[in-house]
Image (spheres, rainbow, N blue to C red):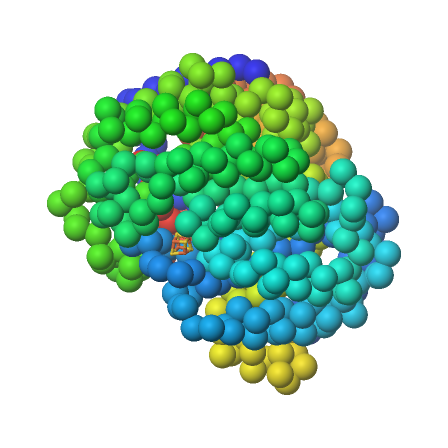
Length: 462
Ligand code: SF4
């Protein structure tokens, strides 16, 4: 795989706000005219597609024991006993409503528990969840399945990982962010190094095939020397994947972030230096850059998928499996069919009320038109494969790519002049220099962006 070139000047120059393209169209285009009936109609239609039989399931567990001050997720901080058990009852009600829409023989190839904190569930509740889901969907027991969850080391005891492996999970990701005690205290997320690294070893011992860790740069008190200590510890434990997220300080949008003292945040210059250091450090230690904050060991399936052109971008970042319809369960979760995105109600009481009334809790979404599907394909090619084959796309969508996207190809010219892309007769290729600037390249093909820019809701690269 070609190495990326981190060009500080270019990263600075292209550091404008923009979408992360975990979906196209992005969530800004979701609207409330799209209702449960629209979703149900499209879900039924999805059964007719012979090339897209497999299902993906996402379950959102919104609860957390305590508040991390940097958090921008949809979560409920509570320690009220019984709260998760009640929630699971509603997840099962929702699962039953979805199950009526899909053919019963569609296998669940992918499953992901996200949050919040999935390991907020007790061992018994985790078992209950998997038993409940298996009542409504054909879960797989073969090694082909990709069943993953996010674990919080602070709520994951030594018995949890063997149980998860027994229940069929074979991939996990864990939030670490930074091991430095001062940083941890400043963001109210104190977790022990030994326990966290012990979980990585234990995950391997009990058969997890992929372990991913999340780090965040741009948190209070971080600097290069300090952060390198965290990187040293992580790299020694050799997780299969490492995701390094930029902390975007948006206290007006996320209330929790108001608890972070702004004067303790690193400057934009330090953040840029941190990012550069992370990239150089991890690639030097043998990790390959997948794209958009993600690194993986060369033998990891994400690298294989990238090399084989099957890598996908989704709400969890990157994934190896294409061609799955995604059913999303739980508050605020987002589902994806080939032809639509749909999002559930965000407040627990509304979500419960909808299910008590026997209604799917979809409150907004978007149905994709042919132009959306075409542009999604182009953006996916740029974000995941670093190449768009214009002839192949032209044939597949029955268009003359060059004339259909004449304005976009024109808009790519300055990026080409800066060495981010190469446009030939039949292909657009992202260069080694452009691999760290996938967002501005993909944004060229986003039809909605000019209007969305007004909303001010996208974060910057740095
Ligand atoms: S970062 Fe994760 S664990 Fe912390 S409050 Fe947010 S969702 Fe909960």
